[in-house]
Length: 244
Image 1 (cartoon, rainbow, N blue to C red):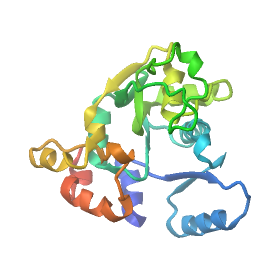
Image 2 (cartoon, rainbow, N blue to C red):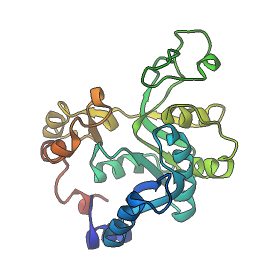
Image 3 (cartoon, rainbow, N blue to C red):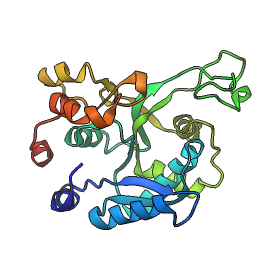
Image 4 (tube, one colour):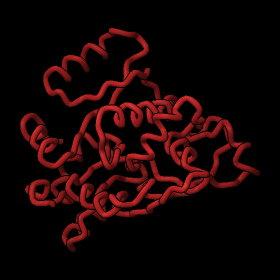
């Protein structure tokens, strides 16, 4: 992620704004909040939400993020990406630009996984009965590692956030908010390359927008491996500044 003057230049010249998005701990003013505030004073690259963090609160955080971002920045697209996913920013920008003239766009790697009724398993769906008989699958929706929505969809979430239902899983919740709307679902597999595939794709001239390991729902051991994935799968060093 660009820092300092490079980040400011990216915002001013390319209109690309990047922030680490985080709410607050359950203990207001606690050690974690103070540590984040200190880091934000140093780098200025956080977007703090009026939201209490918690894994089971990701759907609520998603609503708050899009509503907050739409109020702060008049952008063509708003993107959510997990911090253990490798992203080529210029390639992402070029991908989104191809859909700029379309209304109500929802872009991601679309999937339709099983609705898990069994308690205690990961991704358990407490409201499984709403999706029909046992063994059914969810409606098609973007996987949660990275997705983008256009301005009018972010505005829709902002306006209706208090009546949009939250399911257990954040990506399912987002997809459910667009059911019944005239939305263009765009399935782009370059947003979910595997870290074993992104290198040869880059060498072939097909740079991936995002790369991660499906088995880990992100890059496995991302702290240790992120730089290596970037070395193998990253776009050119000057891609951000040469991309139109």
